[in-house]
Image (cartoon, rainbow, N blue to C red; front, side, top):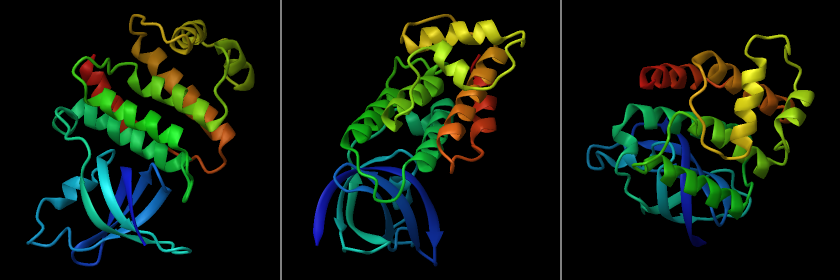
Length: 229
């Protein structure tokens, strides 16, 4: 059966000589794995650009009940990015976001509210006025609400998370998190505080999700963001 849906690409792998297998979080069908034939052939040169992480697509897909891998019939851009693919910093944040989503969204998981949230964050990342410095942390915090474990305040967060409260940066991390949870704009924390606060949040995710493992894009993100400072 053919179905239309919006989708957000999370990742893809090369398959055979000219095809790919990709993970796409769709609005109407949830997370799906799709086989896309021929996109790496000479005739279809450039079509793999449609399947880069966080690309927003309009899709027509074959939906076969009980199938682990479905097929894409048609794919076109739902939104053409203006900045994201051409900016190393934005691309680094996108890579990080896509990896996080790939770790927390499971096959067939369907949540239209979560889809709309992610789509909105992707559009924000492509916007001219985005503040990149706090963007990855704000994404983790807001995403945790959809996953069911967003803390109500910084005190609750650090009571649950076993950290060294004697650390020289602990009070600064608490203060920065209080501001982020209140979604207020604040001056950039130091590099050390930013890194430790990110580590705290990744540990928090690992506490709540057994399958949440090492985030490989983190070092790339940190390197790019350090250059941005």
